[in-house]
Image (cartoon, rainbow, N blue to C red):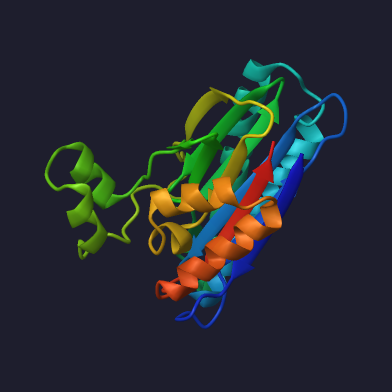
Length: 244
């Protein structure tokens, strides 16, 4: 497996509120990749996203990394995100500067030839296999709700005035609800985790094209970040890519 990650401030922000991390298992065991996009002001957003990533990885390494039972790992990831949510809430309550902060999170876990995806918010995971590409997550956002209920179409969603409004985040409520998906993957598939600083600027078809064309994860990350900045770079841009 080859892995690379890149985070960029973009062209409009004064600081980077995104965070990422991963824990790779050698031999028997599983591996975890995490991306988070903080909110609540420059300082607080970055704190929230770092807490989420660190908490997820620490919980994973302490409790899940050596597991090979898919169901147990799925249950453990739900506990991990609940733990991360609690830490964000506790930190926010300790300082006025952090009050109201929150973060999205998306993580991918590889175990026993299965791919487990968990997300809260609108950071995404994609899997590219051969000539096909698939978005593995569903955005928890106001415009996604409008699209799913038939009130607007995808083109309208891209320009909707409330397109940046998410409906779930770590740090929002004590009992956060995370979506979990289970997929199979094959050797050579490309996995991409990213924040909306990429997906708002780069169309899915272009993301798939780059992931298929470029020969290694570093080139994929570099190219995608460059495309997002060329498209306007309106937000921080974070990409984690693995060739499985």
